[in-house]
Length: 125
Image (cartoon, rainbow, N blue to C red):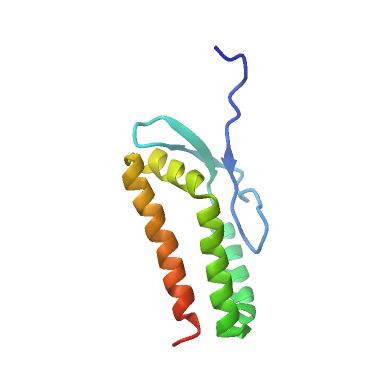
């Protein structure tokens, strides 16, 4: 039996390269497929959504200004990071979707394969 206190995770928003708390200050509970607590998630407000759209529009010029080759490299790097953290992603998919380990592995594999596929085509089209 452990005497440790359960550290509950609260996921923040990701806007413009930062992790701000929701402007509203509210969060909601995220449960797994069995109804067991997984984490708290920030409840975005309309202002948070507007801030995210403004940040995305601001980033668009930089992304579209990159060469197709560079965009392919970035997508491939995301696939590499996902592959490196594969056990973490498999566990998260299992917990959130209630899938078996083998099915969760297939879901993660498909996501990595899809990123590699798009990275391969980024400078071809």
